[in-house]
Every structure is written in C-alpha cells, then in structure tokens.
Image (cartoon, rainbow, N blue to C red; front, side, top):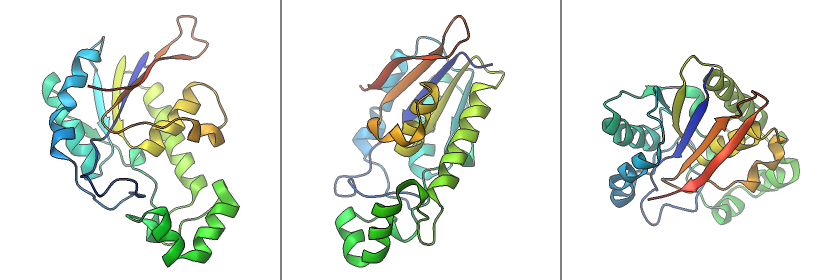
Length: 199
C-alpha cells in the first residue's frame, strides 16, 4: 500500500481566466506558473514511485513539467478529472446566475445533490474522486504523486482526514501547490504533512 501521497494542483490559468468554474473546458495555463512548477521538486522528501494525472490538458502539462525532473512518465487516470460542470463550464458565478438563473438557484438549493446541466452530478463526481483515492492509497507504489484539480484534492483531504465530504470546502487548494499525506506508522490513518506549499 502507498505510504506517501503527494498532490499537486495544476498550474494556474492565464490572468483573466481565473475565478471561473473550469471543468472539462481548457482555459490554458499561465506560462510563469507552469515554468515555476519545478521548484516544488525539492519539497518531495522521497522520490515518487508513480506519477498519475488527470487527463485534462492543464493537469497533464503540469504533470509533465514535474515528471521530467524525476525522469518519469505520468499515467493518465480519468477519475482524476475535475467535475464536469456542463453548461456552467468556463463561467463565473455572476455569469451562471445571469445566463442560467433557474439552474443556479437549483444548485444553491440542492447542494451536493445537484446535477450540472449537460454535465455530471455532484454525487457521481464525489464517488469518482473516492474511487481514485482508494486506487492510489491501496496501490503497491510506496510514494504516489497525483496531479489533479481543486475539487478532487479538496475531496481527498476529507478522505485522508476521515471527514465527511461535505466539509471539502474547508480546503482551498491553490494553483501550482503541493499537498502531502503520510500514513501513520501504526496504520490507523493519515497525517497531513503540508498543505498548499508553493515555490
């Protein structure tokens, strides 16, 4: 089983494309954010034995930027992709409320029971994130690096700390940051060693 799990949120989108709901659409990445990602490498106290990544472009290019320092090849895992926001993808909250007022109201009302129009449901997303978490923590790799998205990493923080998933909004993974968990020596759970470490 894995004893160390590193999580990196992908490099930041370009200025002007942040503060939006990016799911499956591609906002691109800020060149400065991506070029600095290698500065996270010295923070790894043990070399990853496997690197997995969301297949979405912004995560995949971030994974490539890190993997090159370890002479490794990232392995895409579809379950690491961000929520499919459907018609909300790429919009700010104000734009969602203006263009899709009924759906916006339903999201605010239904919370974790909501199904994004032309996208996926929140329960399906959370189940997918949990499958990915179980696959990685139960893998035969000692130290795994997962490059993913804010929603996935926040959900994983709850799973590692044995918190209900509805508390995931307490965690705000920043772009191009490293979060890590290590398994307790007695096997009783996990400890967060750092959160949102940046270069």
